[in-house]
Image (cartoon, rainbow, N blue to C red; front, side):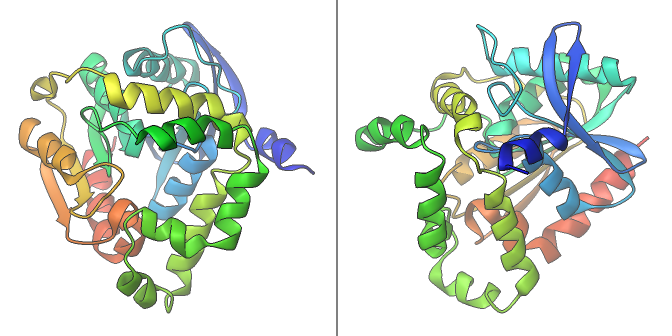
Length: 286
């Protein structure tokens, strides 16, 4: 079975009142919807579901332009949030806790704003809440070209995974420590496997690149649902200032601020993060 066929076998296409979306469901219990990060798809959502576990039903859609989820003419986070709500209608799910991971943060915030009655809680995990600085000009030129290939991104990771980890904020010293922890290294590898093959995710990644640099500041001070913000100080992808802004602007938000771990603190510091996430999910579940 090819990689693409394997991906298609793991999800379903759902026709909602506002469009078609790909999604997968796993587990049983109170419902948690995962708004995955850049480069992912429903498979990254399932990865996060397995990371946190517990007695929950995880709903893992592919965001606009990822895998088999089409990208509409206006692929803004507001529209994505409305598709999330329509997917819940199709699945006959009344309400969820939503997790925004990285570039999945904006649509998670919009879901909490636009569909607050269906949102029991919000977790922002290394997630964007305001515009991020654009990529350097050289990277902006190279990025779309690289995404046209399934082989080049895979080769870069296969040859030098440590370089990729360090680019995401895992220092040499931290990597040396966690190399002794097989489960954390396995989780890092399986996370990156959810970004391959690249080309079915290209449209979504380019959309993220555009949306993250231009979107307007949201009125997140009006979010009333229980909120947990998790962010590392040395995150080079989504700067800590965005996590601080989210935590300090949403009324009553709880802020778990980590000194290291970079963009993947949820793996490197999972023994610290998992119990807090689990307690939040259990407290605000159905």
